[in-house]
Length: 78
Image (cartoon, rainbow, N blue to C red; front, side, top):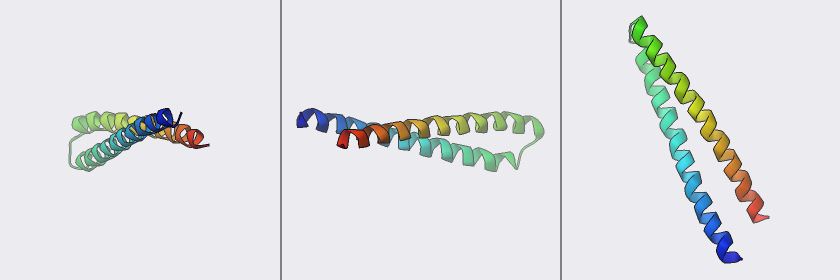
């Protein structure tokens, strides 16, 4: 049983790292786009605003995934 728990744990840790990486990517990209928007004309701003919205949604999705995985990992330890 310990073998399977360790394998599951390693998999979960790997997925958690991936989720964290995706959150960081989307936060970074969102921040870069927000900085760009201050320097652009109206049409470009509209496009960038849509991209920012997309990255905000992705951040929320990946944060929820992170929370679920952390919950699963804590339940496995019990």
